[in-house]
Amino acid sequence: MSNDVRRLGLPMQLAATSLIVLGLVGLARLASSDEGARKLDQAAEQTRQQLQGADRDASTAGIGLEGRWRVDYEDAWFTGTLIYELRREDTGLKGYLIEILDEAGRAPVDDSLILEMHAWNGSEGEGLYYFEYQGERYEAACRLEALSSGELRVRYDVYGYRGDEMWHRVAESVR
Image (tube, rainbow, N blue to C red; front, side, top):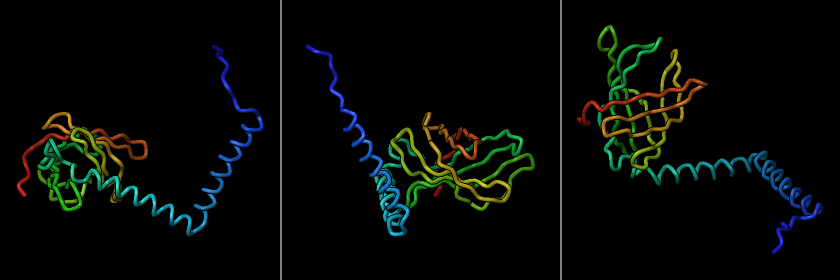
């Protein structure tokens, strides 16, 4: 038995490479036209919606994420506790800031959106994490991991700042 590996000759290698390059150039050209860019955007949006829709019904299956969660902070910009409430809505599971506790006591909040769950497999998931910094509102992709029925880890990366929050269950939802 021979150990010879059949390889394409140089002309065939050049032809294969040329086909790949032409395909990439064609795709780039399609994306550069307005109509082509719209078609690529529509296809990407449809794919995103299908992926989100596939996991939406299972977003809280198995562990019951709905309810109130506490996050304690000890940072230079804030020391205190935030209380979030995760609620099931028609569009999926969403988290809202419902209470702020700091050195001065309780502060009023506006029930602002903090988290949107896009996918959940029962122990891990992903979504969008929203926050405010210096009066501007931002969003970041986040990863979620259930460490137990009472602990949820939320991780995100924004402009090089890596957030790693431990959420602790406070109470079941009252809504």
